[in-house]
Length: 115
Length: 115
DNA sequence: CAGCTTGTTCACAACGGCTTCACGACTCGG
DNA sequence: CCGAGTCGTGAAGCCGTTGTGAACAAGCTG
Figure (cartoon, protein in one colour):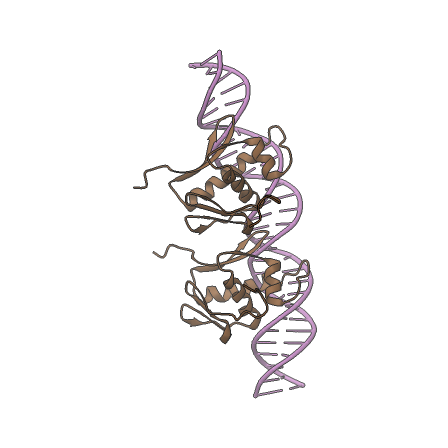
């Protein structure tokens, strides 16, 4: 596979979460998620920076490909949408973690021990 | 693998759905479906890409073997016809899933937990 | 030719996605 | 414990996409 020409989005696995940006597809626990374009792109960017905090502004620019206007809440709104869909598809796990004043971080964590 | 021209269609099984393109035949839950040529070909192409999203245009070109004109709704209409026949033959399951802005995806899912 | 099936196209209804706003809950420094 | 700023959340409005029923044309069969 040629690497480096232009950043090809590749498959990403974060615990039970698998993302295949090429195919506009994300699966959780084997179950295909129904995501809108923005939702998928946001999830993809979070996943590409898994376990690291991504600043809200950086996240916006990666997904929306334009600078974020001050006070724009779009990222929050889409984080919410993703959280709902992820929680629905796989209850008991949490993926998107808020870092107050900084941004968000993606990592697969079980809220309860997997009993 | 060469793609497209001379590939012999093979039998495909997607959950309770079995397709035998050779015999222009599709069975659902043991029940033989009555499909027109277009319907069968559409279903077959969806099945060949099971669990993946097939873009509307790609689907059209696979089935109609000519480029899709902008605004052509044929795929939608035939998806509808297939959905009706599939639902009639096996209520409670859904097979053809819409991915807004991209296309369709075939996978066997029960709407209600199989209690 | 009459009747049926298939395929195509259209028009309108219904739905989904994106953006923005409003308000309440929360966090943190002091 | 307070206040300012940040985040969570639900909903409205607009618009493009998809769902749906039906009309119409073409071909086949008896």
